[in-house]
Length: 162
Image 1 (cartoon, rainbow, N blue to C red):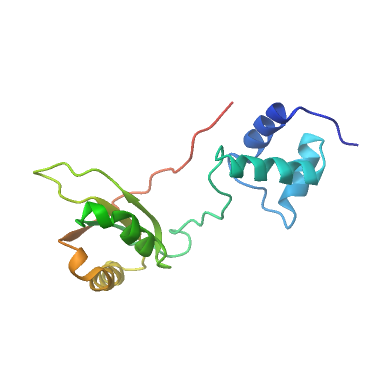
Image 2 (image 1 turned 90 degrees about the vertical axis):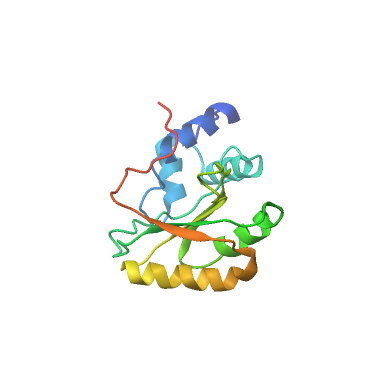
């Protein structure tokens, strides 16, 4: 039995039900629909609508890199021309060993880096080799870079509603 719920209320309930992640189940949308007392189609339609209007950014798997053995994680930081940052960021972000890549403002004169790309590896040497490959890939567009290695694991969560 499914119930009729207005879209605003249903959207909020879907966000609450999924904010810690989709159920670990072969049919996660079915489990959410059962929990909320609505149809699977309603859950899927509302999630698509929230993606389309950018209320939610994406639906994706978020692996625990440490449990997968990737314990030498480093944030590579790059000084690249501002007018090329979107294109260069997209290229670096598409690399299979980069989990996220983004633009940050420079803090001159102390901090000249404006492009950040998180690189995952099993050893520091592996991360260093990947960053060296990235430097080659960027060529003259890279005016300098560094690697900031993770020193501890922080709990990563997005915004939570109650």
